Length: 319
Ligand code: PA5
Image 1 (cartoon, rainbow, N blue to C red):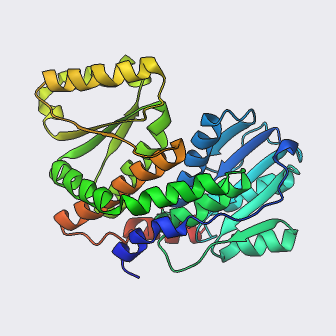
Image 2: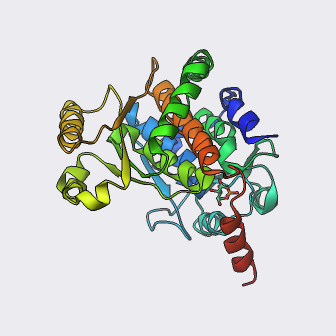
């Protein structure tokens, strides 16, 4: 399947399924995963927090597990598209040692084998995708586990479908603005997961460095860096927000845009479009996915291969 076909399939990857998980049993939920599989935890965490869920949710990247995970009242969701990422296998092993409740998501690999051997719930996603292009499959498995309503997921899916041409066009326009510059994405708490996804998609698909910072924290450091005209002239800026961000954050978004404009910078300003927070998150993510795809084309790169990631994994597999 071509990268374009994989991207196009994103809305249809969002599939609601019935689940009988009793979420009231858990005190914490720890999402474990790396790269294209790790982002699903960030999105799920934002979505859970926005809907006012009382359970502590954490997105964990790296080996082992945070100390608080001890006992079955802690739910650990291990997501690895390939099922072979060593950090995620390490999370699985730590969760089993600590008697946590574990759920695994992968298209196969070692994680599936381990889950089956240990009698742990394993949710399988279709194979044949690059991990980051299978976001919809992995995310809808997790959201379903977390209790997303069928209507909410269907509405977000429909929103992506009806806005398909607009999303693609925006992605292409944004790619033209980012071309030749280091993309810097300024986000808000409600759009931080999207900014991170934009950064990583630009890294992996467009083979380009990209960075992001989040309000309000960036008003206490990042903004001072804008004083350096030599460096800022090498960057292209994106400001993203959600209409439901805290009112003081919205005020800070306006101040940030003014600050950039006063420096002669015209940022790309983008908010998600959709009836629900989930719909807007997925809209923003899809615009960024297309932008990274078109940016790859402008630089003459194939979006799919990530040779250096493969090489590092190969080196690590030697011991
Ligand atoms: O998108 C990619 O190819 C990477 O970011 C991978 O997702 C990352 O290396 C982790 O691999 P996996 O998703 O198979 O666990």
